[in-house]
Amino acid sequence: MNQLHKSVLLDEVLSFVKKPTKSKFTFVDMTLGRGGHSRKIIEKLDSENLNYYGFDCDDEAIKYVKEDFKNLKGNINIVKSKFSKAIDYLKENDVAGIDLCLFDIGVSSPQFDDPIRGFSYRFDAKLDMRMDQSQKLSCYEVVNTYSERDLTRIIYDYGDEKFAKSIAKNICLARQNKTIETTFELVDIIKSSLPKKQLFKEHHPAKRTFMALRYEVNKEHDELIEGLKKATEFLNKDGILMIITFNSHEDAIVKRYFDSLTKEVFISKYLPPSEKEVKYKVLTKKPIAPSYEEIEDNPRCKPSKLRAIQRL
Ligand SMILES: C[S@@+](CC[C@H](N)C(=O)[O-])C[C@H]1O[C@@H](n2cnc3c(N)ncnc32)[C@H](O)[C@@H]1O
Image 1 (cartoon, helix red, strand yellow):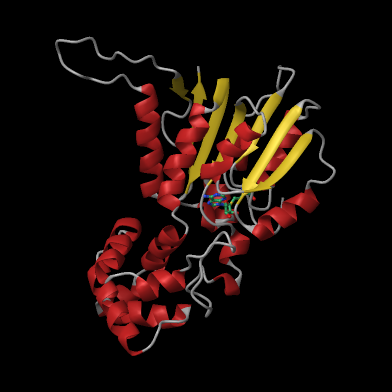
Image 2: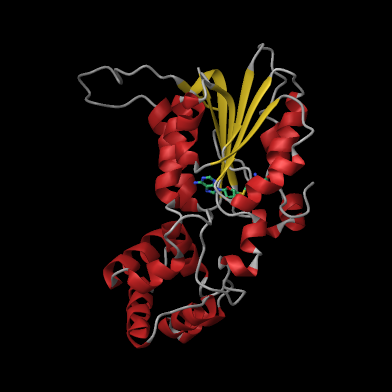
C-alpha cells in the first residue's frame, strides 16, 4: 500500500474486477492520484493484453506514477488531463471503448497534506487549491474578485453552509481594505461570520467554505457530470464503471445519473412506461460504504461511497 495515500474501498473495488477473457482489454483510471487502485487492479487483471490509461490533472501525481509504473506489464499510458477530456484523448488515440473504468474523485492526501497547496485550513498558505497547477483560476481570484452574490451561491450550494451569506459579505468587506492572501486570513474571516456556538462544533468552522471554494476553483461539479456522462457512453458491452464519491452531493449526482440510464421513464398512464432501450445495469443497489475496520485504519475514508454500473 502506498504510504502517501491510502486507497479507499480497495477490496470492494477489486471485487468488481475479473480476469479478462477477451484478447484486448482496456482499463481506464480517471483519477490516478498515487496509483494505488490502479496498481492493484492491474495486478489482478494480470494480462499481457491490457491496454491501460491513467489520467490525472495534477503534475505531481503524473510524475510519481510515471516512475512507479515503469515495470508494470501491459500497454501502460499515463496522461495529464482533466477527466472531462479523457474520452476525447482516448478517441484521438484510436481506443474504441472501455472495459473497466474507475473514478475516485476529490483530492488525494498528498494534495491535502501539502501545506503549500492551500487546500487545508490547518496550514497557513497562499490561497491556491488548484489540482492542476498550470490552470489560471485559483482560490485567490475566487476570494478576491467574485461578487458577493456569486460567493454566497458557491458557499451555499457546494458547501451546504447555512451562514454563506454572512461569510460572503465579510469576505467582500475585508477585501475593501486589502486583498485576502492566505488561508489563515480566510479562516479568521469565516470564524468572524459565524455565531459563537458554531465555532465549537465537531467540524472545523471553515470546513464547508473551504470545500465549496475548492469545488469552484477546480469546477468539480461540471467535471463530475461531463466526465461521468462521456465515460458511461464509451463503455464497451459488459464494461463496468465504478465511482467513489466523498460527499452526499456527489453521491446524489451519481445516483440520479445512474437512475436516468437504467430506469424506465414514466411519461403518461396512457403510454407504455418507456420508449427507450435500457442499456445499463446498476451493480450496486445501495452505495457501498467502508467497513468499520477501514474507517478505524483511515478515518478520512468515512464519507466515501462506491457505486458501479455495467453496460449491457
Ligand atoms: C482521491 S485521489 C485518487 C487516489 C487514487 N485512487 C489512489 O489510489 O492513489 C483523486 C485524484 O484525482 C485527481 N482529480 C480530481 N479531479 C480531477 C479531474 N477533474 N480530472 C483529472 N484528475 C482529477 C486529483 O488530482 C487526485 O490526484
